[in-house]
Figure 1 (cartoon, protein in one colour):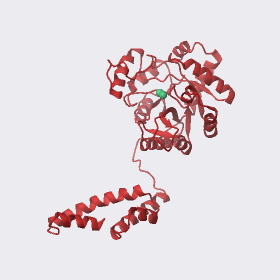
Figure 2 (cartoon, rainbow, N blue to C red):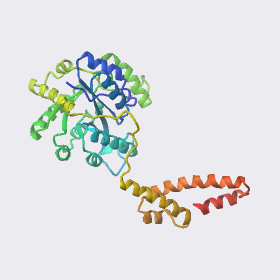
Figure 3 (tube, rainbow, N blue to C red):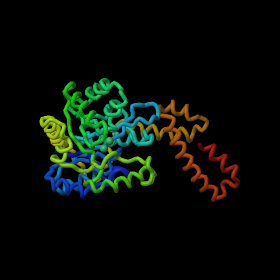
Length: 357
Ligand SMILES: [Zn+2]
Ligand SMILES: [Zn+2]
């Protein structure tokens, strides 16, 4: 059994598992590979990678993203999805998705299905938890078939249905639904435990952390908390106990599939020397356009942002960003000449800025 749906201290205000604890747990349980899928965050991956390499354990780098089905509007419909990099292209795509998710922030950093499709190379996807891409529509009685087909279309052979069991109401019923789906669509199943802390004893400390996260008090009855104290690291025999309702063959298949995923993962992070981006011809071309834009703004002060955007085929926010930079530069330059006696009044100072920008 290979765990990769695990949250550690880098899962912002939501995990208290230390990387060293995780590694020690893997050593104690003779587990040769462990992964990390923090919420909307990749920053723990490098520490996991380095410490795993030292301990001769294979690291699996992943993220539990928030995904919105509404690409146009800001609606609080975030669903969870675990996305795993199985090669370096996948790792680069995880970074691109992570980057996009923060630009598309609404309550949480969010990706969309179309971005996932655009950056799908090198990635494996699982359906995550009870807040996941299938669980939410299932409990909302939304027809799930078109959603499944969308994912199969893009991620055939790289798409897994994830069973979890934390004793939450409705979880067994949802797991049985996933098993039916697996049969119908010939999809592989996995078992994960969605760990946020090392052992059951840490559940209380984790609750306190969630209070910090949500700005609430432990005394508040309405505060956000996990439904049970089962979100800790579990080995295969512990999982077998809680999944007592699963037939042996399905349980073993789920465990085997986690090993198959781990075997297919092989991300190598370069840790020495410099890691500058390589500029493609396209990027050089856009840089040339921005230089040209600078000149146009300086020498054609009567052109407005829209005209400039059209002329240079760049977006209006890009133009506005440049105008802001140029305004700051102009202010600095003019302040310099003012010191030398060039401008004596605030009015002439302002007029000069307007003239230049
Ligand atoms: Zn989740
Ligand atoms: Zn999770």
